[in-house]
Length: 148
Image (cartoon, rainbow, N blue to C red; front, side, top):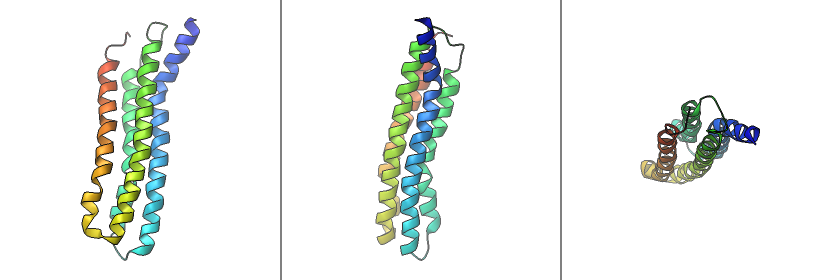
């Protein structure tokens, strides 16, 4: 039984990075595809499309920081806590990045037709980023309570 708890701890340790990376890949790809399509339809302003398509990449950074905050000797005592925090935070980061990519793609698509609303169209992506930050902060705070 101790081996299973230790295995869960290892999964939890690396889950924020792995799941955050998966979400960032999907989110950046989705927004990047929209940016490529938009560049065919406009004569200038390409940089803002490319910049916006990179926005979902922040979740992998959060995942790496959470992984480092969870890093400790894994035992049967702390394995379940590491698993719970790591996997749940990782899932939150993954879904946040994926849906943020969808928001970015929508912002790119709408602003190619009406460039003056670019700043306002980015607001939904920023709101989704806020939820990733909440999960990140909660994981950091809770990780301090897991036995070393």
